[in-house]
Image (cartoon, rainbow, N blue to C red; front, side):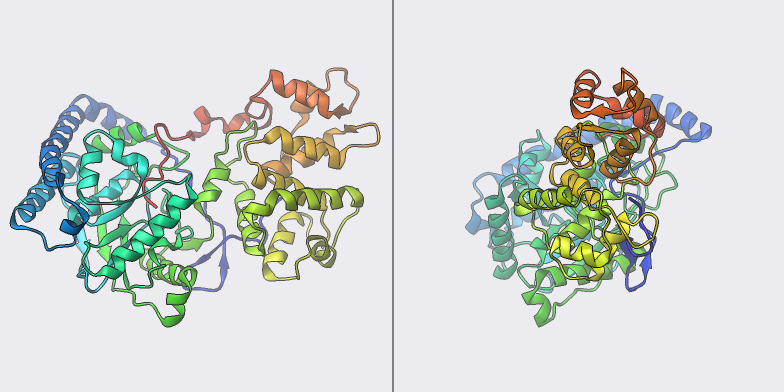
Length: 506
């Protein structure tokens, strides 16, 4: 698989021209010069412990105020204007939180534009979402937020979160998502609640682009105020993504910087048209375009689900330059629905087996999928048309679809691939294995010689699925050992972020 001029996944904001695909928005690498390493070592022994103690002290100091102010407050109380004592608590907590950020090296916070009044915009949409340091505008405004339900159980911080009366959502509960949207709509349209601050990307990225906005903030159809975040630091210790430094490492490195810059820009209120009110997805895309233009970054149709695909727990871990993220986006755009994807996979696999090694042109591929020729279909076709000769092997499509459908079930995908490629005696060659794994990982080139020889113990030049399965049972990390040792975590600087995943708000 490879990205071609027809298969690129992003475009520059405000332009219809297709641009080169950005680096994976879910990966962040840090490389330090000798001077930076020396500075971090010095700060670790001197300023870091002082900052950490002072920041923790400020958070603990805020806890009793938030706890007392939250006691006995029911929903009706919240919809009334703030009482004088609650206003005092707000001022105190904002001051304490500002001191906490000051202790972390955020000596000044550059604010551009004017924050709209609640009557002008009930919802603030903030992007890009890249770190838990994005809590800075939350503590400055004390706007309500949409937060994953588990956050309320975090000691101390959970009490501070509950003080601003967030809307809690559970990612795993589809009914919870529906209730969350209804609650956002109710609050936004009531005109009595505090503003709601929403990070519509739904997960953390490296700020290289804006991924797909979830429609929750736009379903109410009310005006929103876009808010963009920037961290213009020479060394980016702020970003916390799915692959890269973990949460504690980010905290340590950030506190070891003498100064951390942050910029918050309130853009003009976006008033939706009648068409946008009826179409939340259109509304979300148009707001995203405005924010991308302000940031000077491209937009891409990657989603939170693509992030899950990139880091699925299976024997094959997708490389950061995989084409499968682009493929997954095209699968959605084509109209294949997640709830029927497994049935679709079975259907396409059966057809591919009947076709055997027969190649397909664009029209044949269209008939095979039962979708009309479109720009999306052409882009998908181009992913598999590596030689640009106008024909593809539909077996590769089936393998890629299996990975998207079952990202953590590597052996099931490989078993299906064996069924597609095996000869009459149930064996495949080294060339077949290379094509299978190349497609399953979404790359244009791969060397499987060492892996094939390790599986082919009897040196027959052919292997069966049973041979591969026995080998995988003994060598569960065969991909790291045989396929891309040069991309190992320790050498590339990539690792799965420690602690919980960086999907703080929805």
